[in-house]
Image (cartoon, rainbow, N blue to C red; front, side, top):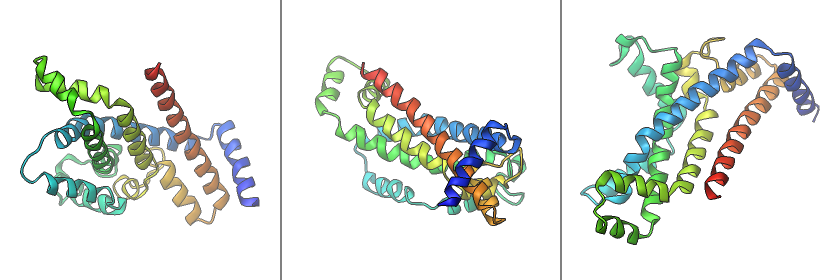
Length: 231
């Protein structure tokens, strides 16, 4: 129990003292995870709508692939991203390895299946009379897409929160393609791994509490937005 008490006290000290390495890790974590979620939503929402709305040959196979990707370990994603971004990889010429952009790319691969799968599920659950009404009013495909996503906005908010929770707490991708470079690509999760590997368990617990607080604040903000939409 002393470890947790000491970790909590150190977490407060690190935040109050304005520790550069801690705040750098927080900024990197929030930056890359937010960009990853934003891009995942831009790509995943339309794809999820298509998967849930239309019937096409091979749809069941696509759904199985998407659902399988939900369980893909982050270290596997990191390994694939590393091989693609390394000098000998397909995208090696862009020199993205060990950068925040590389972490964002890997995290998009992590978050995209979550957005697609949950969006498709929400679209399939919507009353079919909505689609008939929209078509009867002469709505085009883009208008049907927008109206459907608005109707399913609360479920999509849950999808976004689920994806963000998975992204912000991952470590395999950040470690493998980010390199855990201090003040550059070190995230809170990679900092925790580093500190506990050095035997600094109290610091690791402190950083874990900081990560929990960051995730909590994001979820509170999303919940407030959801409540505002209800009103």
